[in-house]
Length: 104
Image 1 (cartoon, rainbow, N blue to C red):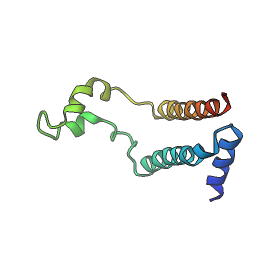
Image 2: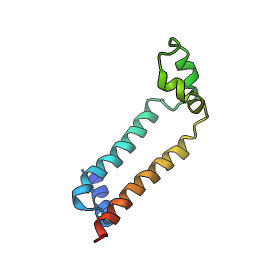
Image 3: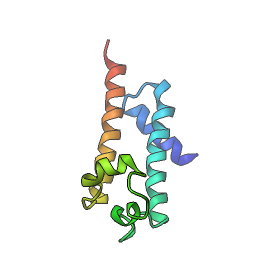
Image 4: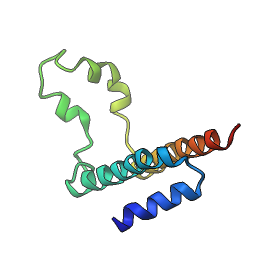
């Protein structure tokens, strides 16, 4: 509860309307917990991010979304950069909520 309270306080001090604080805290916490769980379960371990090996196990056409995005899914992933980009997206959501609260 102390960790959640720290996030609550940070959001309040950032100017987020109190009614939006619980939702944004859940967003932040779920993001951090999800990323940590993925790390702990070795989802991001070397070799596990190779989508070609997993997609190749299924019959052709079984994963239409994956097939369409294949060229993007096959690119190397910089997880540190992705984590930072995701945090920046969350920061922008929080800043937008604070701006809405301060506008007339």
